[in-house]
Figure 1 (cartoon, rainbow over the protein chains, first blue to last red):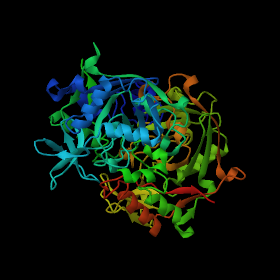
Figure 2: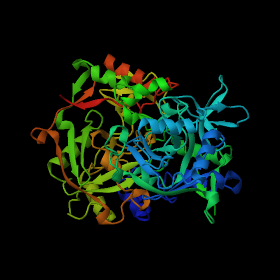
Figure 3: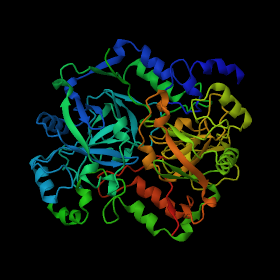
Figure 4: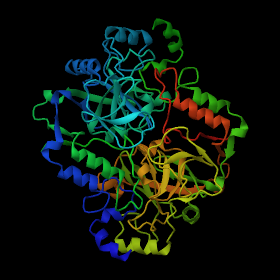
Length: 306
Length: 306
């Protein structure tokens, strides 16, 4: 034990008896971070700025990557809403602990975004019916399987996304994990119109997979939103307008001059395979590496381009 | 779609296009709740009030069940700290997004609870060395296996706890899920003294299983703590004393006259087996039941006794 002290002195924050998620590279449990830092340029893929949605709220800025590969109609609808300014002056309407933060565009009639009477919602829904893009054909998609068991399906990565597939049915879909962005819907499965979105702020609700249109993921800025007060009404809805967090504006990154370029790690690259192994076999602080990691733990590295 | 409206009118909140976690019993996706509500008294087990820790912070009250079955030395140390009032005027020192909320007792020298210089921590640690209770012998423990695949181990329940086991090694341990409470430690595995605890507020970090002393779970009141601002320093530590949330007092439920009695569902009961199946096969809102659920999703129902 004494021998460890000089090492620990170099990183005093680690002394606070912490289960460590991403400590500095000089200490243990960092090999995934080291691999990411050392990955060659070829291991990174550019994210199209037209697929990045930038949401400025009273809590902070959330940067979201959209996934047209998996939900083309929903993503097109969301982009149209963004370009029409429909999310501007929208509200975060719901925060349910260990589940979701949900926000809404302003309805067409100019009323406040939620708790609309059913006839208003019915009207909005009928104005923009969308297909139930809960899964898609796996044809033509390169699938990198996870080397570890998955409770729900065959898990892996497609084009930089945490995903799963059903080989028999020939289908693939995005997985619901922390930071996943989906489209809220009513009971009928084809009623989500993209004007009400959520992001996951709890244990990956994989039971939502193939039950709702999963349209993207948060690249940055989830923290202040995950830290919003939980709503006190059923399902975590806020009771009063005053509790709803205001959305100042939502734009695509392609509409914002000088907005940083973003990259994601190529999930078919050797670097990503190394990240997966490193996350499954953590060292240093860990006296017994798990030898495995579940899909939601195996996040795809993303970064602002340098 | 029109036909659904009368039903939906009866529950207007559900209209807000929400992925639903626990809607009212009159609608779909509620069979687990219905099973829990209808479970006979024999399906419930009392929780010893001497194993319940009640923490009052500036954010709210958090009720924690301790697990002496799995970490007897740590739980005894924590109870001793509670009885000595060591957590009173302690602080929540760290909130890391998608990971943990961590809090600390006041150190013996009366200084503020964290960022102590290494010599102070060394002194505290040496005063109370504890064994590394990361797993235990499975001998004599009744194990109810999960019917579903687990990425990490053989998953199931032991005496009302989400747990896992290694049949070959003859060991069992508590699983790290949302709301799990563990003991922070330094790099050497035997240095946690119970004076610094954390609870999980993100995707179940199962890689911590068998790497840290898991001592209990939150029964109630995690919400306002999971919603605390994330710390801006490395690992989510708060930078300034002013950011740290004050702990007014921590007591055992057995020390608080009139504190409600708590119960947990007997994980060997038929009712719990039904809950597991219902959570794996959600209906109503769900067009495609998952047919499985992972261990951290399969929480053990707990309630205040009526």
